[in-house]
Length: 337
Image 1 (cartoon, rainbow, N blue to C red):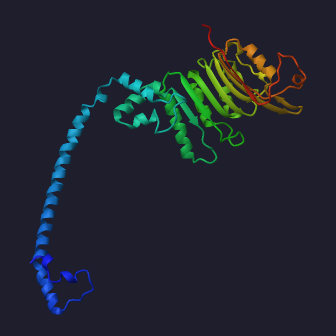
Image 2: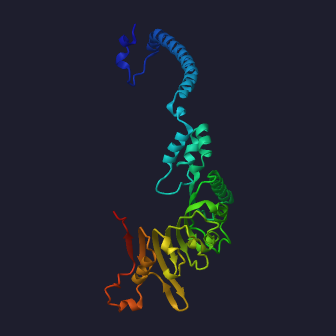
Image 3: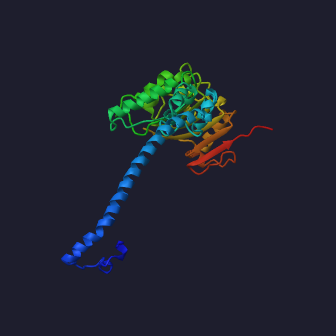
């Protein structure tokens, strides 16, 4: 008898309590269905064992098949020089390469052994680096040492390539450190600096800013944003190869020993200096005109005009207009046709 035809169908899913005789009858009704259920469970177990065995056989076949198919991948047939060109296109174009395992070039060494070998043996991939500075009083020493090791190895991989380096330190100050380890670490590579960006305490950056043309023979671009005065460390700004300067500093514009006549690009913002005689420095409109007169070869120029001289307030000459303070004088010269 099928359980669908059971005399107890109307009692199912209720609170009915069967009698002793009905209990015996129910046990009898369940014998055949329970035996059938056991047979089905046994078959399922057999099939699951067979399926597991088939899956294992499939995996043992699939692994070598995939390994052989990988040999047919077009990327394997790309010549190494072409692969390097592809790697170069992965590098950032708007800024120097970051010390970030998720970005090129570091991400490229994580793909496979071959790519790692190609990347490490291609100095051109390591010719730019952005170096963030950690707080030396709050960061664990092992983390600091790790960063210094990464920077050293990175620069060494660049071999003889010219370098583009940006160093930003907004966390450390002179009272906390006598010298900056990362700045000192850059010095042995100075002869290959082509583009250099420095941000931070001027005292920390003095070892680089005091370098001359013998130590910076390739330097074309120097961009700085310095805290405090740097009146005693302008040597790097005198280098004759410089063509592009960006300088944000507390100083008198006319006191800056820049190679004015050679510059093709200039961004200049001069803040105020506080002295015993009051506040000096800044750049007024007259100073801006003077800067432009000194730079006959400029193609691109941005000057932050943030000062108004006392004598300029009473000057009504049309050649010497007085702009509002804290304005920017941007100037771009186009080549002649």
